[in-house]
Image (cartoon, rainbow, N blue to C red; front, side):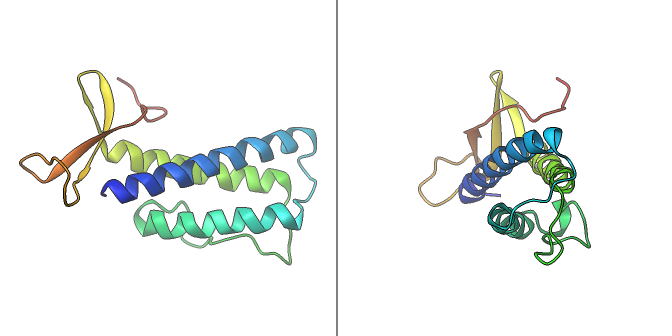
Length: 134
């Protein structure tokens, strides 16, 4: 990973979390209601981008890409899938962060012009990965 990957990670994981929270609220009220096509279009775009980013190593399911638009998923189905993607993003984060001076930081390849360490790596501040013990 490098700085560009961290930026993409932050964007995608933030969008996933936001969509997950909204659909989870809908699911609590009406878990068996179908998603509307408008939301499904954006969820599928986000899932496709996440699949590209996570690649085989972190992608949650080998046989799932996006929801079938002809077989609209229920709210609870979307919550299930989105939660799996969020967990995989957190696994990726936990595999690429370190604690330095009490702060969680990405430890990733530096780009041209970055102040890199002896290994060509840089630190970028982040948040503690979820469900990791100190």
